[in-house]
Amino acid sequence: MTETFQFKLHKTDGKARRGEVSMPRGTIRTPAFMPVGTVGTVKAMYLDQVKDLGADIILGNTYHLMLRPGAERVARLGGLHGLIRWQGPILTDSGGFQVMSLAGLRKLDEQGVTFKSHVDGALFHMSPERSIEIQGLLDSDIQMQLDECVALPAEPKEIERAMEMSLRWAERCKVAFGDQPGKAMFGIVQGGDIPKLRERSAEALKGLDLKGYAVGGLAVGEPQEVMLRMLDITCPIMPVDKPRYLMGVGTPDDILRSVAEGIDMFDCVMPTRSGRHGLAFTRHGRINLRNARHAEDMRPLDEQSSCPATRDYSRAYLHHLIRSNESLGGMLLSWNNLAYYQELMAGIRLAIEEGRFADFMAETQETWRRGDLPPV
Image (cartoon, rainbow, N blue to C red; front, top):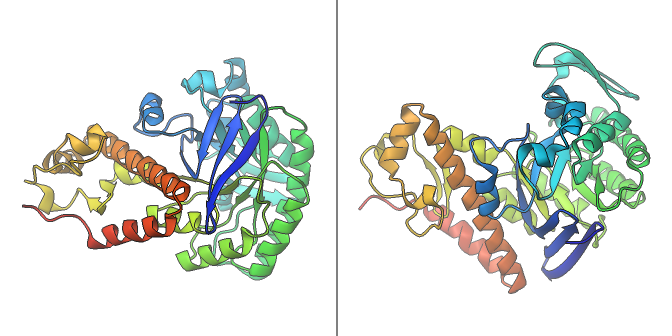
């Protein structure tokens, strides 16, 4: 740990990068997957479990936490870390993505966004400055600029307008953030699926000399190949000595392919959301526990896993829990999924260190393609 925010790049293997982010509250081993704790909870998980699985950092969300329990209340209670009993680093999303989903409940202009709460209809205004203020009240360690995220496909003029405004908001967020020793504010590259706009956004943000850079506005409706093409364009522009974060991504395959493009940090609700709906991620690929073929299968999901949820519970029991809508089913599969994601990240980091990332990626994808082992 360190008293300042630092990123050290230890090894590269092709475009893949192995590094560490050091902060007063802990060290983040990269490439890293950040479990999503939107409202101060990683759904269906104890945070002690999340830590034990290998997570160095979790994510919280400005939009949701400002509505409930309220940023000022969190500050009065000593900050988000103490409230939720998580002592490691926390990254807070600015709320821009959630505001995008409120198209029918918001008004957006140069000053920010005015929106109605999806909880009780109360009216709120969030400017770039207020977004940073809220994140400061939450006492998060990495704070994101307020941006406007546009779902794809979209008209080029709309993508360009949102990108340019996001750049202006980034400048205002940097001023509002000021100098906070040990903390960081990241800018967010926008530009949709238009290469020239991605280049323009990345170059302008690079000129702000921020402590980290995120790629936003992807995994919002475009095919994987489009996402990867935007990363291929964007990553070479971003500074080599700063962490790179791909927001809201994604599937295990998305993560592997994005690491191959030079991404360091990821977050996604997929592991826990899929778990609550009966889908397990394993080294043999996806397993849908709702399927009737698991009803009398006494094998675990993976007998070689170190995770108790994966190793110690039969598929028959998991199938029964999911089909019966029992909470325990979602808890166990969320546990399994987060364990697999962290195992994948650990494997990625080791492969980069040993200079065999391309082989690791090919072997992992081939195991997924072979699929789940049939019952004996």
